Amino acid sequence: MDSTLRATIGGFQIFAVVLLLVTAIYRESSRKTRVPLLLRPGLVISLAMVVASIAVVSLTDEDFGSYATLWFSQIIGIFLGLLLSRALLYRPSAERIQVVINQPLMARSADAIFAFGALLALAFFAWRGVPALQGNVEQGRVDAAIEGTGYLRLAAYLTIPSSLMLFALGRKHAWAFVGASFLIIIALANRSPLPYLFVPLLFVYIYRTAKPIGSLRVIIYALVLGSAIVAFGTFRILGQADFENYQEYRQDIRDGNVLGVALTSFTHYAEVVADNAVLAKSLVDSGAMSVKYGTSYLILFITALPGEQLSLDREIKLLSGKTFIGGGTPPTLMGEGYVNFGYLGTILSGFFVTFLLEYWFRELLLTSRHSAPAAVTVAFVTYGYMVYWVIGSQVAGLIGASTFPMACAIVFLILWHSTTKRLPV
Image (cartoon, rainbow, N blue to C red; front, side):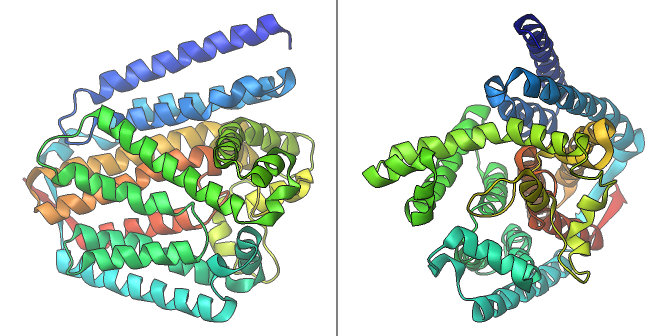
């Protein structure tokens, strides 16, 4: 690919991004809700894709061509999601409906799920020890998952949705449940679940604060949360001697250059989306990886089958021959879609995440009309969780790098639909 063609494709990308943002802003600005503009479905999807595309400039011309086809496929899916979701979800009959939550039933259900998750977390620690206290934290948690404790760890993460629901419902000592979930996540030495706990709490604050929060404050909160995640990752790198084996970290670790380690870590994650999407596509195109036809989305369930069942990120890492500390190579949302159904899968991935957010945003709007404050808070928490799942999927895929986000999303779905009913206004 010559520089002229690359520049032309880049120009079309910029045009598509501008069109997407204008469409999203026009669509979202007319909605009456306490949710800031930047956190409404159209803007969340658009900005997540834009941010995930920043590092595309570092790709070679050949890789840029592969990435561009995936990128345009996903943005087509997002446009379809924006255009069709309103027609599918916002029918005139829905305007005369309110959502009412059976709060006692939801609280009892969340109590049971939390107790189940906490008990299995204790069982994991008793069996495998506490990963955060072990020498090689990063590889240790991966080895534990491979060695048959994956479902115990998954159950431990179910304390996230259950504690959030209890907090939203105003359960007595609610902070203790959130704090216990936080400690379980820290003990498991995996920082990726932390935003799934904290971002929904931000939505509680958005709803309960007396003065509506603007988009500028949302940006500030996002920067603070992102900095905290980078800081946690930097501390983890500095605390493990094995990272000195990597040239990009070696000198900074030896010099104790915390900012250098943090910058390298941030740059690495900025480049992940473009690089990993191209890698996933190349493995399928070369025949090294077979097309999954949707089976990778079922890894949450098929890992219970006899024998070792590789998750998509671990399979990509194995087939690519890459060696690094920790888990697998995240497939990205567009790469995950391509691995399953080719370009159609990438289009459907963009459509799905858009429809997912629109669905839960509709539930939030319906609940906000006439329901009790606790019920509305539950709707804000649930939507907040889905917002971060969609944002994170640009890097990890929906389930390609970890099973717990989908498992927790299923818990939210079950709790919501088993304890709510729709009544005419």
